Every structure is written in C-alpha cells, then in structure tokens.
Amino acid sequence: MISAPLTKARQYEDTYKSLIKDEERPVFHLSPQIGWMNDPNGFSYYNGAYHLFYQYHPYSTQWGPMHWGHVKSNDLLHWEYLPAALAPDEEYDAFGCFSGSATELSDGRQLLVYTGVKEIPGPGGLREVFQTQCLAVGDGLNYQKYEGNPVLTAADVPEGFSTADFRDPKIYRKEDGSYAMVAGNRTDDESGAILLFESEDGFHWHFASILDRSYNEYGRMWECPDFFELDGHQVLIVSPQDMSQMGLEYHNGNGTLALLGAYREDTKTFTRQHTQAIDYGIDFYAPQTLLSPDGRRIMIGWMQNWDTCVAAVAGNKWFGQMSLPRELSIRENRLIQNPVRELETLRGRRIAYENIPVSEEVILKNVYGRLVDLTIRLRPQSPDSYSLFRMKFARGSQHYSSLSYCPSSSTVRISRSHSGYNRDFVHERECFVRRQNGEIKIRLILDRYSAEVFINDGEQAMTMTFYTPLTADGISFEAHGTAFMDIEKYDLR
Ligand code: FRU
Image 1 (cartoon, helix red, strand yellow):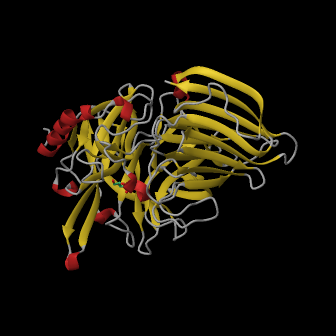
Image 2 (cartoon, rainbow, N blue to C red):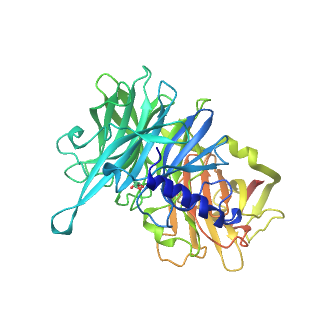
Image 3 (spheres, helix red, strand yellow):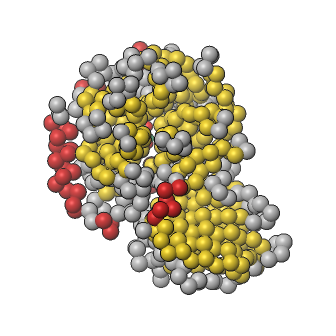
C-alpha cells in the first residue's frame, strides 16, 4: 500500500520535474528531481544497479519534512530518477524520515533502515524530540514500512546517551551473514559518540557496544557514521556538528572525519589510531560508502554545507548536489580518495602541453570549459623559483574561482570569493599538501556548478560549489616567479 503522503510526493514529482531543464543542472553530479536534497542515504548495489536515496523535500528548495528521494545508475554518473521511496506518514516518523542506509536481505529483498523522527510540544514552548531507528522492505522501487517499527528506541540507548539525538543508522552484513549497524549519538556532556547494534535477521536488534566517542574533542553530535574494513585498517567515518577550527586540519562548523584504527570482534571495540579530515574544501558533508561488485569501497557525500544553504540560487527549482563518487584506499595511514574510474568514460577531446613556463598570466589554446577533467604537474624552474602559483577557472569578465599553491608553506587554497555569490560567508579554504621531489600534482574536475580538487593522487580532496554564469568558462595560469607545468585536459561529456 502506498500512503497518501507518498502518493502526493510522487504526483508532485511527476507534475513539476519537467520545469527543470537539463541545462540548469550539473551534468554528472546528482541534483534532486525537484526541490531540496541533503545527505546521501541507502547507497548500495542491488539487483544489478547502484541505488542511491537522498534526504529530500520535494515541495521547496529548503529543508522540510524529510522524504527519501531515489535514483539508480549503472555507472555512478548517470542517474535515473525513480519515484520517491519514503514519506513521513507514520506516527513515529511524522516529523521526517531522516538519514539511513540499505542492505540486501537473505531472501533478495532490499532492507532500508532510517531514523524516524517524532516531535511533540514540550514545556515552555520547547519541543520534545524522539529519534528511533526504523525499517522498510522493498524491491528496488516500492518499500513497505515494517509493522514492528521502530526497531531501536530510547530503551536501547545506554545510560548517559541521548534519545533525542540518536540517528543515521548505517547497516552492513557481517561475514557470518548476520547484521550490524552503527548510529550517531551524543553523550550527556554534549559530545559525539557512535553506537553499535547487532541483529541475527535484520529485524530484531540489540545494543552491542559504544564504538567511539569524542569527549568534546571533535565537535558535538556525531552524525552519519560509516564503518568498514579497508586495506587492512578499520575505518570509522563521522560527520561532527559544531567543530572548532584546529590548524588547517579541521575547520569550524560541520566537518567530516575519517578515524583509522583496529576493530576487535570478540570485545566489539574499536581502537582509534589516526584521525584526519576527509575533505578540506567548503562543500562536503555526511558521506556514505558502498562496496561495489568488483570490490571497490566507494564514497559519496552531500556536496553542500549547512552554513551556506541560504545561498540557494534565486529562481532555481532544485537545491543540493552530491559529490562525485570516490574510490577509497589507504596509503601511509591516510585515507586516499580519487574520482571513480567510470569518470574516464566521459572523457572527450584531450589536450596536453608539457613544460610550459608560467609567470605572467598564461592562457593555453583549447584549455577552457565548465565540464573538464584537468591534471597539472607543477615544479619549480630551480629551487624557490616561484613563490605562488594560481589557476583561475570558471572565469569570465567579472568572475573567477581559483586554486593557488604556495610552495614555502606547502598549502593549497581554493577560493570562490569572485564567483558571483552575494552572501558573506566562507569562500576560501586552505590545506597542507606534500611536495614530492619538488613537484605537486593537482587534478581538477569541473561540472558546471562545482569544483572537486584531488591533490597528489588523492592525498587531499577539496570540494566547493559555485553558481557563476556558465558563460564564464575561461581557465588561466599565473605565478610569482617562474614555475613549470605539464597539463593534460579532457572535456567531459
Ligand atoms: C546530516 C543530518 C542527519 C539527519 C539529516 C536530516 O546532514 O542532520 O543527521 O539525519 O541531516 O535531514
């Protein structure tokens, strides 16, 4: 049975989706069918296709009662819109179907797990919030909420942990076929924590352990966890709210962390060994991963930032994009990210130049565009021959975005200060990078309204969105002193 709120959302999609022309959307980054999109949910491979759900409010370009939007794809780049999968239509999720995940049941059906949110008026005008974990079962198109919902409630949360901030379950299957999930939480001291739950059949759940907690070190509430094994390490991904800046590693506000460590199944304990930011740019949050049929751990994130949602473009009928799916690996105790290799199938014309001296502004023939996969190798002419390198892109007579590299501090900075935004919020971010034999390698992926930068084969990623008019498609290079660069550029289709 499809409920009235879900039928209404599906009809709304059908009626209004054609209002958005293809040219108004990014080409190979997902945007919502209509309205608002935040976190990726239920990122999974099911019945021969990649499925992705997303936090969704079809009726406006602002966050509202959360539905789950739904798309599927064969290559992680071209997404087919499917009808909305979940709507807030039960007493326990009346305030919204918050973030969650998906796995396949032993009988071949797909299991969705999400946070049902209920809010009731409390004393003094405050609201009382209940966040519980709920299930829905389906066939890749239609999903029925489980009659036993919610399956995890306040009663399953250990003493001293929050029942109001208890959300974003990430489910996975263990080697023996049983199920586990990690969920975000907050302790009485207001700092983040991740709880582990287990189940034999996917329907009956119990608390297993406290996997990690921040003791006020990394922000407050930890949202959207993911937990998996990668290259001999155990990785816990979390998205903390309310971070305070720490050097160039962590910026203020909502951040993303990768915690690398070891997991012991017998004690169900995780020992954290290395901690790093996942993306050093402006717009990346709440990432989630899947394991592809060929064994790749692939991550996708919300390519947006909670503090800049006020910048929805006037007149747009959609807001929010997903990042490129990224292949993950671990090198020297760091999480490495690179765009999925499928991106190479979108490559068209190739232009390459070698050993180009850069000092005064250089514009190279056929190096321009807003759909671009561009790789630069940069080196000095002689030690200290340049003090700053800058590349401008999405450049027109009045606008540009930029990436600069300063060899003495070994930092890369991205900036959208001149991209045409008319709100005063963060427009620049900077991070440390490594120079290898004096050289650095920078890969820039442009898709109409975003730039994703991968440094030194994925050691750092920096992501930002911008809504510069599409006519601004120039690319130029300049340096203080003289640098040399090799450049390889593909147009993307
Ligand atoms: C993260 C988040 C999640 C929550 C969802 C609500 O961006 O706040 O914790 O489930 O968004 O839309």
